[in-house]
Structures are given as C-alpha cells and as structure tokens.
Image 1 (cartoon, helix red, strand yellow):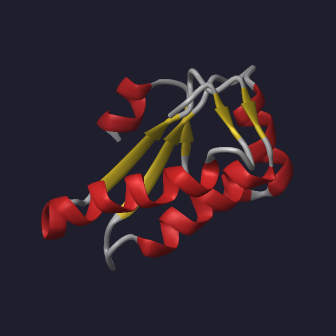
Image 2 (spheres, rainbow, N blue to C red; image 1 turned 90 degrees about the vertical axis):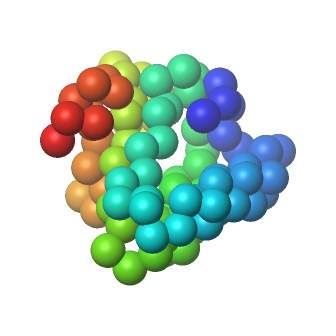
Length: 97
C-alpha cells in the first residue's frame, strides 16, 4: 500500500485492489494488505479497507499488516476496524496464521 492513503488516492486504489482480487477468482482465500510503509492514513483509508472487505467473495478473509507504533495502526484502533479485521505486526505473521 502507498505511503499515504487519503482523499487524493483512496478512490483510485479501490478498483486496483478489487480487480486484483477478482483476477484470482475462487483461488483467493486470504487478502493481505500491507500498511507497514503507510505513514499517513485518514478516514478515507478506513473506508477503502472496509469497501474492499465487503467486496471480497464469500468465504474470503482479509488481514492487515501495520507497524504497532504506526499511524495506520492507531487509525485502525481508533475507528474500531481493528475489531473486524485482524491486524498483524508483520507480513510473516499475517501469512502464517
């Protein structure tokens, strides 16, 4: 994911992510979005994640990766999205679970 997710780019990211998930069809079981390099994320980032989550095929799961001390992690906590989508500290943990 990009360094910033906000009003300026969230709208363009949604079709890119959705098209990648659709390209994998029934093979997609887990979608992992890596936010470790995301240094700024506002409510549009939360909305993007939520929109992607609701567009996944039935049975597919989403996982997020965010640095524990990072802005993305704090935004996910404050908005409550962290309760709905598992958040991991690193990519290896997200892929292993």
